[in-house]
Structures are given as structure tokens and as C-alpha cells.
Amino acid sequence: MTTDGPLDAAAELDAEQDVLDSREAGGKIIRGGAARTGAYVGGIVLGLVSTPLMVRHLGVDDFGRFVTVGSLIFIITGLTEGGLAAVGVREYSTRDGVARDRLVQNLLGIRAALTVVAIAGAFLFALAAGYDDVMLAGVLISGVGLAFANWFGVYVVPMTAWLKFGWLAVLELVRQGITSAVIVALVVAGAGLTWFFAATPLATAVALIAIWLVVRGRAPGRPAWDTREWWALLRDSLPYAAALAVSVLYFRVGVILSSIISTKEETGYYALAFRIVEIVSGVPWILASSAFPLFSRAVGRDHARFRYALGRTYEVSLILGVWVAIAIGLGSPFAVAVIGGDDFKPSVDVLSVLGVAMIGTFLLACWGHGLLTLRRHMALLLANLSAFVLGTVLAIVLISAHGALGAAIATTATELWLAVVYMVLLTRARADLRPRGSLLGPVVLAAALALAPPLLLGLPSVVSVAVATVVYFGALAAMRQIPREILDAARLPRSSRA
Image (tube, rainbow, N blue to C red):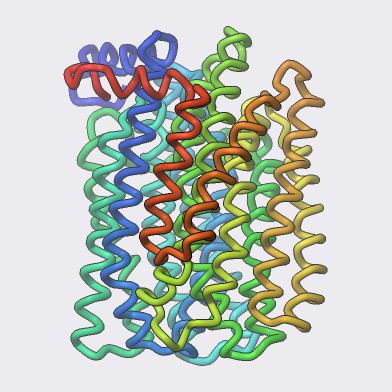
């Protein structure tokens, strides 16, 4: 062990590992997922303070350039991530003792090597695409932030397996808070576009230091350069890594193609709507990844428990996905007005269309983690490749004809298509994992009831979202379609919370 007190630390880690086998795991995951989601939403609220200021300060053209660089960095993030975060959690959840430390050390080494290669590749792509000097500088600055983020992600692996979601929630909120504060300071200072690329790297550096202080003594801090271990990890993760990289590409192909074949104005309109949806899309992955350690622990030991946990995650994902689509659709005028102002009015319809894609995103997060648990890496890769091809073709055709709205239609159609493909793959892998179809009727009915008052009465945007939310969840509760585990977890005493 690489701890200050080996025996005490080992006992503590064993207890943390055993929690995945206990009856408390489900409640900890529900409450932990809620805490992480709450922190994420808190970060969004902080972003609502800083992002509108930045958008207005930069204007349509510069904001489009900012999001274009961000999308490129997000793509190389997927490449450097290499599927290692999810595979790392899966492996850490099933290992013990020294094997866990060795895993973390080699993850640190792999991430460092991949990051250097990916930053160089991103810069060469930016040169080939004709990015100007400011955007090239943005790629390099964002690349430094990527290096910090990748090492931060390694330490998230043991924290996730220990179900320490409260700490993760705090760290993410701190990172977003610093990012927002830096952006506000830059706007006040009248800074140019280049400086805004530094906000996220600075905040991530602080978060990396903080998480290291949390795990110090319980997780190693130095990387290992054991190429045999690297190959063992990469051989297992490469198909999933490729699938993840393709998923990053297909979801953002609209932004990249808009910047190439459309006008700066249309790219800016799509960029604003896409940025809002991109932020919201983090929620389903947070929820699914919170349950993933339990999936990994249960699948080889208690398949019935795995089936039950995945089924409940699907139910929550469907319910929340439909609600988020409703909220975005009804709230799009307010969101665009607050963040972009009058110059971005065309983004309202674009955002409404992209909101529908969130139904697919929630289901993809759930079923994607199910397929990962079953090690169906190649199936994930082929499915995502089909989405990339479909999304690229639709984007080229629709962007040329309809600009930003066409890009939104292409992205939404692709996301829903891929959700259906994931469901088919999952049920083919294990027929008993077929999702409960009886939930669809109540959810559709609740959605129709929720949309009726705002549409019939012509309520203001914010009021429409509030009314629809109350009606939607009220209808589901009346039909007894809200999973009882959610209600049970909410009733647990404070002393037992994760």
C-alpha cells in the first residue's frame, strides 16, 4: 500500500469497497447521484451569471469561435479519455489492495502520454482547418487545461468506487464557481477572446490540487510507466475508447460542419443552443455513472441485482429525459433571452429542437453503461459509427438547406436513432434486460397533460416550465410511476446519508 498508515488505510478501503455489496449501496447511489446533479445544476446557475456576460461581450462571431475551439477540445478529450475513466471504475470496483494502487498509477501514466499526443493532433487539425492565431492560441491554452482535467479524472475513479459522491459534488461546484468568477473578471476587464480560453484551465488546476488533498494517503500520486500494464488496460478499453471517441464526434459534428459550410451567424445561433444543451446533457451521464460501480460489482456476482438496478435506472432516465425535453422546449425563449439577448433570437427554435434530443441522451447514458458493464465494447463502437455516418450525412444536407435549425434536426434525429440501437443491442445481449414497456404510456400521458396548460393558455416561458413540471410529476405520482427507491432514499435520516 502507498498510504501513511497501511493497516488503517487498508481497513478503511476494504470497508469502502464492501459498501458496493451492501444494502446501503442503492441509497448511497441515489442520494450521491442527486448530490452530484445538484452540484451540477448549481454550476449551471453560476454559468447563467457568467455566460450571458461573456456572450454579450464577445458577440456572435467571437462566441462562435470560442465554442468551435471548445468543441475541438471536447473531441480530443474523448480521444485522451480513451474509455479509461469508465473502464477504470469498472476495474477498481472489482479489485482489491495493491492492485487498486497499481491501476491508479498506470492510469496516471497513460493519461499523461495520451494527452501530449492529442494536443499535438488538435493543433495540427486547427492549422489545417485555417483557424486564426487567436483560435490557435485557444487550442494550446485549452490543451493545458485538458492535461489538468485528465489527471483530475484519474482520481475521480477511486472516489466513484468508494461512493464518495458528496466530495465529487463539492469539487465540481468549486471548479465551476472559479470558472464563472474568472469569466466575470475578464468581462469587467474588457479582455479579448484569447483570455477567455484560460478560465477553465485555471479552475481545473485548483480542482486537481483539491482532489489530490482528498485522496492523498489513500491513492498513489506518481504515475507508473509499466507498458505491460498499459497494454493490458488499453487492450480492454480500446474498443470502448473508439466507441467513446466516435460518440463525441457524432454529437458535435453539427458545430464543426456549421463552422465549415455555413455562415458565421448561423454557426453562432447553433453554438448558443448547442452550448445550453451540451451543459444539460451532463446530467444523465452523472446519474448513470453514479450507478455504474454497482452495475460492475453486481453483474458477475448477482445478475438479478444488476438487472433490477439497470431497470430502475432506465425508469428514472426515461422520466427525467422527457421532463428535460419539456422544460427546454418551453423554456427556450427565456434561456436564449437571458444568455444571448436579442441578437440570438433565431436560437430559440434551434434550442427547442435540440431539447427533444435529451430524451435520447438520458436513455443512451443508461443503456450505454449497461452495455459497458457487459463488456459489449465492439457493439458500442459499431452503433456509434452508424450514428456518426447518419449524423454527418444529415448535417451536410440539412445545414446546407436550413442552417442552424438543420444542424439541430440532424443532431436530434441521430441521438434518438442511437438510443433505439442501444436498446436493441442490450436486449440481444441479455433478453431479460428488456426495458419495461408499460412505463411509456404513463410517461406520454403525463407529458401531454403537462404541455396542455402552457400551450392552451399561452403562459410566459418561466411560468410554463413551472406549471408543466408540477403537472408532469404530479400525474406520474398519481399513477404511481415514480420508482419507490427514490421516495425511500429521500426519507432516510440525515445521519445515514452518503
